[in-house]
Image (cartoon, rainbow, N blue to C red; front, side, top):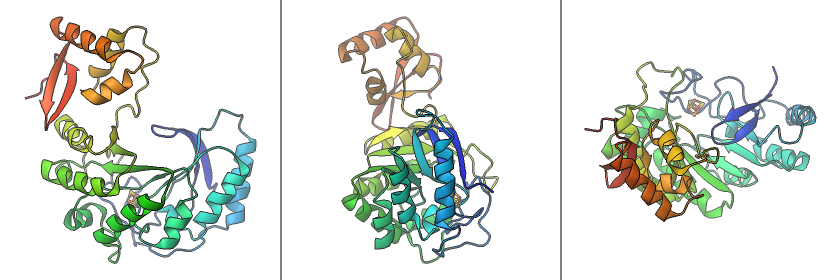
Length: 314
Ligand code: SF4
């Protein structure tokens, strides 16, 4: 089976050429929402699951088969946890000798407490670890880790990595209804994120079939709560559209209406997405939309949102 796949469109990484470093479901976590099913058994052994030279030959062939512009990122991701491959650091460095494209690693972050894993990941341009909980109990409930991979180790590893890592640190939070979408759970995650100080927080939803059928995405209120609370810590990229590209709209009103009718937007996020226009022009357009009954302002958890006037926010 080919270990290199794509490029596939990725919300966060554009057209992403994927490199899969481990056999299906080789993972030291067993997340309730995992789209790959359950980890049976859990695996926490770092070794060369595939020969590094074979992986690099595949990457080289894939790069040669695509035109410049077809690929935006090379991404280590796939059938399990990529940091379990013992040659991950070597592979990142070698891939960077093959291309100028940026390299990302999507990881659960559980092994960042190990100095050698931090060193290896430092060669990547972006690292996207997971943080779904702000306390040990919820972490065990959602991520069901290998017993020695404690919450303290996860948090310490992420915080220490941030201090030494100069690339983009984008933390992923998978929101699961009634597990980590409550105010209490989100405040705990926010406190943990404050300690880590990531560049961005990416909210994901379990929209593909999860390992446990009861792991459901939050409703709109839960999602808004998460955007409000986590948005105080770092820029939040939320699931509907990734980073917003409103460049295709001719008028400001058109750009605002197109976005808020599909999803409520935190005000600072909306202003950022509309940076083509001055803040004064944005404010004027929003007031006009309120007056004409097309938009409404909603306050939630200390943050201000904009949504279509017809949306119901009790
Ligand atoms: S860390 Fe990733 S691969 Fe492992 S169980 Fe969780 S979602 Fe699945």
